[in-house]
Image: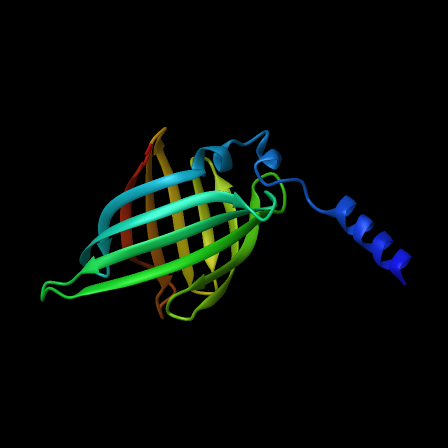
Length: 164
């Protein structure tokens, strides 16, 4: 039994995908995207501050997005939200994964690099666009599909790379 388990483990290791950033040799979006981002914008019409940390994880096999924001309502209350997405590269520009957040939601993710942006779909009715503005600026727009089928923006955050 030990030999079978060892052989199966060795086989799994040889079949494991290459580290996510190594797969980006031809398209540098993942290399550029990795880093610590800090920004401000609006979420559901409220002024917001946000952080987005993007880094390889689990032996470099996945790219993790760690997202947090605080939205400030006019009445002085604050809403906090946190979520984590784990992406795996499934081809030159295709990414898949899962999202988990503080509202208890779990979404399947599918994304593709389209020029200067990563366009991600979460679930059937959610979309996030991560657009490279320049070397150290990123804009993220989150939308949901309304009942009429049109996309409705509910969040827009402009980030700058945090160089620490």
